[in-house]
Length: 121
Length: 121
Image (cartoon, rainbow over all chains, first blue to last red; front, side):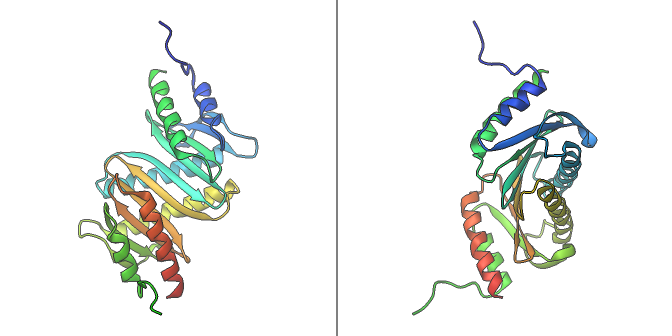
C-alpha cells in the first residue's frame, strides 16, 4: 500500500514549511550555528539569523533548565511585522521566518511532520 | 462614575498576572537585567531569570531588526513542562513563568492591561 506523501530530504522538509501561507522561508541549523539547509528568500542572511537563533536557543535552554521546565521545545519571537519561530528537531534547530499573521497551528502541524521526516533521514 | 478596577502600582500589575490559572509568577525587569518588581515563587531566582530573559530579548531584538520585522513585541519559550513568556512593556520587560497548559489568550489580555497600567505609573 502506498503511504502518504513522504518528505525525502531536508530540502523537501523546508519546502513543505515554506508552502504555508505567511511563511517567508525556513532553515535547518546544526549545533554551533552552522546552516545545514536553507530555503530562505535572498533578503535574509541565513548565517546571521542562524547565529542569533542559536544564541536565543542556548539562553532559552538555560532558562528552562533553571526553571525546571524540562526540555526546550520551541520559541516564538513576535514583532510588529513578523514572527520568528524555531524548534528543536532531532538535535537540530528548524527556524521559520514568517509574517505576523501566520497561522501558528498550521506551522506546528508542519513542524511535527518535519520532525518525523528528519528522524528518518 | 467609577472606573473599572485600576492597577495602581507595579506589584498590583504583577499580582493580576499571577492570578491567571497556570501562571507561577511574574516580574518586571529594567534595562540591563535589573529586577524592578517581582511576584515570583521562592523556587525561582528572579535575578538569574532576569539575566537570561534580557539576553534572549537582546538577541531577539537583533534578529527582528535583521529581518526588518519592526519592533520586538513578545517572546514565548515553550518547554516540556512550562512556558516562559515575556513582553516589552513601556521600555521594560514583563516576564511570566507559567505551566505548559497556560492559556496564552488570557495571558495576552492581562499583558495588555499591564501595559496600560504601567504607562500611567
